Length: 341
Image (cartoon, rainbow, N blue to C red; front, side, top):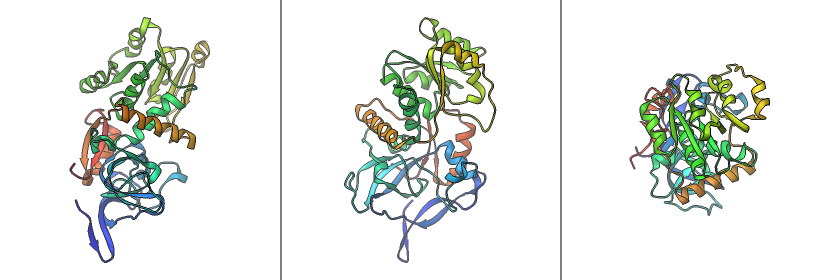
């Protein structure tokens, strides 16, 4: 792919959504390349991360006040090279390898514009495909472990990660292990289980009969777990509570639709445990803490992003099906490969 010039405009290929609907409303279009304003950076995008929230915005089912105006280009996560700088930007230089924690114009494109505060160094040891999957996955995992739990997860605690072979799950394993935690992760395929084990966690299939009971047995001394990261609360929440130690916490990261979940509130009382939710990026103070923590992990090598199934830009509709249905199995972050590395 390469940008072209039409009249006075530099053109580029991007996914354009002109109406809300199913995956097929995403079309490859030739549109004007955005230009960075003051405090912004123009990025030559090599890879973009695909997230469930992208599908909700495309479908028009996301919170109405947060839906983008039509037409729009999806995507907040990405990685690439700095192409140009807006006025006042001195935190990066043209030619720098970077990962993105946000974009004002959308990352499903050959180029995108981001605020300078959303542009972060990407070492050569991490590929663009890996870097494209850092943003949402690691921000969600970091918030779940360190800012949504009072005082954050502590060394020696036991963490259960449901759906541990996905982008957020793998990020959570790495962050928890770096903190000195024992981690148990669930997955649904042999490949996913091996991936979980490769990150240093114990692994168990969520398709196994009575696997929830087995999890408690797997925990040190059979005492249960301190923290549960829950990707499917509509299925598991009621079963999670008996696994908690006294004072434990379930962090709800995912829940399908508006499905109601029944729980035994007495289980919360008996262990004086808590349920908290995670959605979005958090307060401005949290954003600074989370991004600093992620960048520190990238520098010290404890964060090692895992790129999963990859799709070309023209197959963005298929990537949206995969991120919801996991036809290829849940194994790392789903990526749009915009350019060859």
